[in-house]
Structure formats: structure tokens, C-alpha cells
Length: 450
Image (cartoon, rainbow, N blue to C red):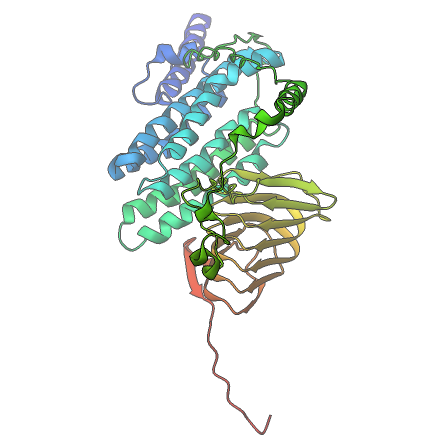
């Protein structure tokens, strides 16, 4: 009987081990061997990443492949960035946290992959799919949560708010004409949601490392880092000529005596008014072929770009084509004044007292929370995205303005005067943006009873 019971126990143990191995094999994504999982340590955080994050990115790659052109090329770069992040998570699951210097080397492949995605957008600004490229370029910094502590989830949500500006534009352009591209635009919300849930569950205060592991290597195997750039070559220094040389040259000329006048032109009789009656009658002395002075070139009309804090007021002026302007160190007592900016994007993080755009063209402002008012005056073809609360938006002498509201800013009051082509977009119940025009003309009728 004891022999039979021992065999039963051994059989039960073998069945438990078999079931464990089966579960592990079922969790292996397609195209990867069991040996690769063993090499990764088969930890829970790696498996959770594969199960919750990879499916959405796989869908993103499939839709990008169907859309094609620059979107497909961009997706290939995104794929490399995701692979670089997964390699970091695998390393963290096996090793303990390294020192700061080693950690920077470990994160370098991911940093280079993110930069490659953003550089692709900058190099293809003339692309017909620029809004697609911009949505991806704004979203890809989400993968940098591995270097954020202690609140990486908040960082991901903040990045997604910037992404929505461009993804909503893609959704608006193709909602009716191309459902495939509309689905592509909606996918960013799923990517952000799944990434936030994963980080919240396994890395709530920062990237989780294996405290019992060995010291982490400085490479994840995601690819060698590029060699450092060569040191800059110093420009040759030319010594200025001393002022004493110029003074001595002038004195030597004066010391020539009568010879100093030899270089002067002789005034002939036809140039004298008392010798030339025709010249005296006209009252104008002709230059008679003298060389006309060459006008000095006019200086450039463009002023120096400015972005600085003066007291409690942020001054942003004269930026042209700057798509990466971010004001992040803000307080509730500060105001932001944006003047004469053209074809630029300004992001204002945190809560400020007020924002004003004056004489701007084709400029986009993205802000979180405003205590008092956002003011647009003398602007043309500007856009704004309110991610948080704002009580009042004032529009004056502005031709062409598009305002995107979030659910938190839908109760804002809009005051407009002497303006045209004003539109607002608000989120619908299904998450799609609903666009509405602000009236420009009014019909007034006198009513004696009122």
C-alpha cells in the first residue's frame, strides 16, 4: 500500500510539472522558441508584456502595412523601438538595477530608436501622410517610461494627450472615406491604455528590476550603439588688425602735401552753371557719368526667436517653423504670451493663469489647464487643443481658428468678435470628434415689447 501511495504521489507531481510546462509553452508568442523564453528567465513581467502590449502593436503594424507608403516605413521604425523596449524589460527581469552610467548605456538603443522615429517625421514634412507621421512621432516617447520614476503611468497619459491632436485629425479626414485609416487612428487610445495598464500592474513606481539577479550588462543585445561623433574642429582665429595701422595710413596721406589732391576730378566748364546756361536754367547739376553709390543691403526683417520667463510671464516671440516648442516649468501664477509665431507648435504643460496669442499665423497651441482665459487676437489659421479645464476662450480679429475640446473643457465660454471661420470639435459618445461652427453673422430685429 505504501508503494502504491508513493507512486500516486510521484504521478501527481509529474502531472503538476507537465501542466506547468504546458502553460509556459502556451504563453510563447508565435515565432519564438521555448529556448528563447528560458534565456529570458520566463518571468511574469516579460510574459505580461507579450500578452498585453504586443497584440496591439501587431495590429498597428498590420494596418500600417495596408495603408502603405510613408506610414509603412514609419511602422518599421516603431517596430524596432518596441523590440528595444522589450529587450530592456527582459534585462530588468534577470538582473539587478545598474548604476546610472551603466543604465544610460543600457537605454541608449531605445533612445536611438525613438529618435529615428521622430527624425523620420522631420525629414518628411512634405508627405501627404504628415498627420499620420506626426501622430506616431508624438506617441513614440511613451516608450520612454522605462526611464521615468516614480510615476511612469502619468507620463504615458501626458504623452497620449499630445498624440490626440494629430490622431483626431486623421480620424476626421478619413472617418467617412477610409474606415481602415480611421481604425488606425483609434488604435493609439488602445496602445496607450494597454501600456498604462501594464506599467501600472508591474512597474507602478518605475521599471522593476530583479533584486536577486546579477549586475546588469551595459548592452541588451538590441544592437550596437553608434560610434560617437568626431570632435569638432576649431575654426582658425584671425587676429584683427590694430586701429593704429589705420591712423598711421591716414596721417601718411595727409603728409603728402599738394600731392594729396591729385586723386580729385577736375571740374570742367560744362559742369559750371555760370559757364553753361542750359545747366543754369534747369537748376539741376548732372552727375556726368559719375559712379553711383551702391546701396547697402537691407538687414533681414526676421527678428530673433525668444522663449523665456520674465518675472511671472512667459514670452514666446518670432518663432518660425518650430514644431517642438515646449513650456513645462509652469505655475498657476504665470501667464504665457505668444507673439508673431508662424507655422509653429507650442505645448504648455501644467496649469497657468492665462494664455494669449497675438498676430500668429498657422500656429498650434496645446495646453493642459488655464485658470482665467485663452485669448486669440489678430491671428490667422490657428489651432488650439484644450486637454484640461479652461473657463473662457476669447477670439478677436481672427480669421480661421479650430479649437479641440476634451471632456474636461467642454463647458468653456467662447467670446468672439470681428472674426471668421471659427470651428470647435468636441468628443462624442463613441470617442469620435464632432465639429461645430461658431456663428459669424447675426440677425437683429427690434421688438418694442422687450
